[in-house]
Length: 168
Image (tube, rainbow, N blue to C red; front, side):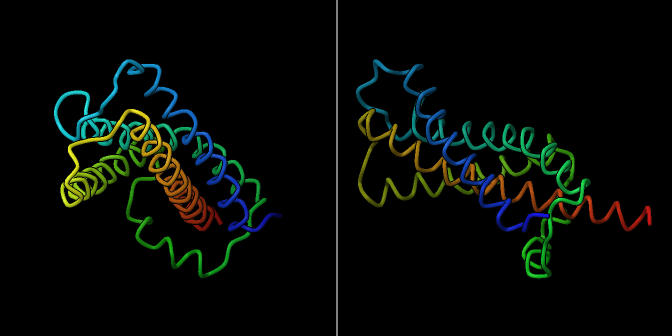
């Protein structure tokens, strides 16, 4: 048996590293001729942030859910009451990978995008150099990937626990 916190940390770090590399690489491949990425408008930081938040959350959920579900069903993870308390809000969210990922992605986009916009406005910036954008994308997709991985695992823990109490 493996402690749940250790599993979440390992999976979250793996997801963060993958997203910190993969998302900037995709952005670079699609836009490598850009020298400046504007804050708003077509092909902008804001549009990219919103789309990336939704797609990343959905894909992370689709990849992490089956593995987490397997670990819980096999009884290879142990959790504490603290973990259950931390995840109480998640119990009200969908347990299916696609609906959970899509919901988390829309919420993430609704929170991160305006915060990103406001931060740039407060700083008086109209955008970033392409290199700056790549760095920004690596940082926020790593953080979002870690967070979504954590939420997916905790949601699956609650789902498996609820189903095991119904079948006992």
